[in-house]
Amino acid sequence: MQLEARASSDKTSQEARRSARRELFVSPHFWMICIFNIAFLAYLWGINGWLPGYLIKGKGIHLEHAGWLSSMPFIAMLLGEIIGAWLSDHVDRRAAACFISLAGAGIGLAAVMHFTTPLPVIAAMSFSTFMWGTGAPNIFALLAKATHPRVSATAGGIFNGLGNFAGALSPAVMGALIAFTHSMDSGLIFLAVMAAVGCALLLPLLRRY
Image 1: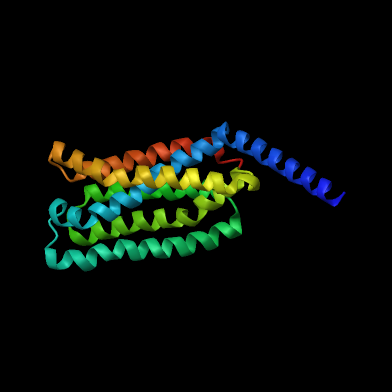
Image 2 (image 1 turned 120 degrees about the horizontal axis):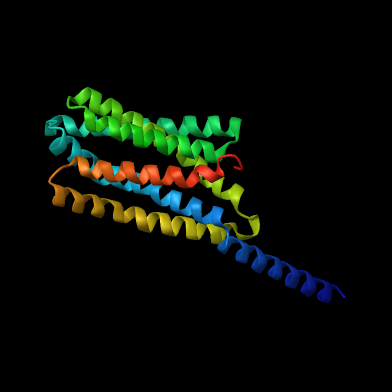
């Protein structure tokens, strides 16, 4: 009896998992969040790959100052992650937190391109990375809210796989744009456009999550 009950329970669990997986694959909200994550990680990979070079070649900051100046935005990013996690746990509006985060990051990049002297450039870039950091803890919480716990591993694997693969291409795309246009700003324009696309995709989710 016990073996039959266990077999029946396992079969029911497998059927429930398959049903949840089918729902996941046809869920527009899941795919919107995945594409948002691509835009989100494109920013991170792009900044990691091009920030020092942009400061030196794009803004004329001297090599001996570029090292410590380029570290400031990443310190700001860390602070953003800490503050963003604390605030979002109190408010519990994950989609809104992610939207504001990437929108702020894009606005910061737009400001960077309009400044020419080192301190305003670093301040604007630090604002941009700080805003990105506020969304980093929330994007995983957003995925968890939008997907069934039975398929959390499947959802997380697709989410991370697509995001990191596409994000890893970001520095290459930026390099190609810079080579084609002969302007370092074109790389930041690409990241700003990606941020705008990501924010647009998240609009339908703001009230629900």
